[in-house]
Image (cartoon, rainbow over all chains, first blue to last red; front, side):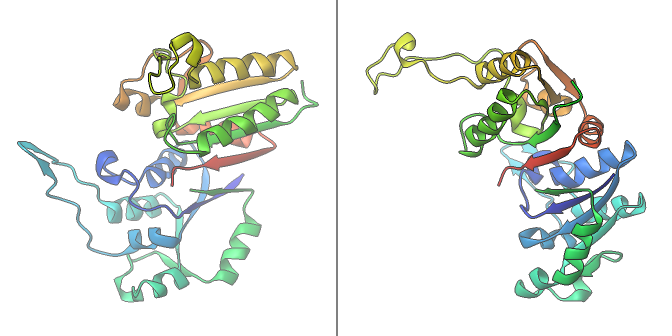
Length: 126
Length: 137
């Protein structure tokens, strides 16, 4: 079974969970043998931007020592064999150029997106 | 048992905060009434849905005591749907994401709810005719 993980809702609990929960879920399922592809769309295309940092969160004396590192989470997921795409049109509409995108993440046109959906047995839109 | 479809749902929302919760339960209800075999993977806030320590309360704004108010408790919906599915020859297998339970402290769950991991979601979905994820937005 091939599953396409479409991630659209972005920065949903990422501070509290120290990651994106669906990218984390993909890591965990890949570890269990899942055949996954990830497509970032909508505001989640911003996950593919290099060099982001969410470090420095502090409330009173409490300090967050392990901030989310989405770039690393994407890179390591690709290292496990999961292909990650980012919607080209959603990048463009947010003014994000190709050179800002994490290495290894491929741009996806709407035509290619349709092909990807046709190739997948399960479409999970988060 | 094999003649009725098996459906897997992944759900993320906690009790009460969004309209998606009631919609999700309505889909479970239809499936249970049809005797389908229903698999639920409760992820993130949804693990509080079958939390057994939920308590109904009175509502002074409504002018009703606790008994009259009959405040909806999602744990009762889960239990009722488990019974409904079984009555119709189906089943409702509810799996709570264990780490999500731990970080929220909602370890107490009603009978019939099991603790699992994302690999369970993958396995349940792979063994189902179809699957639907309903994320928090």
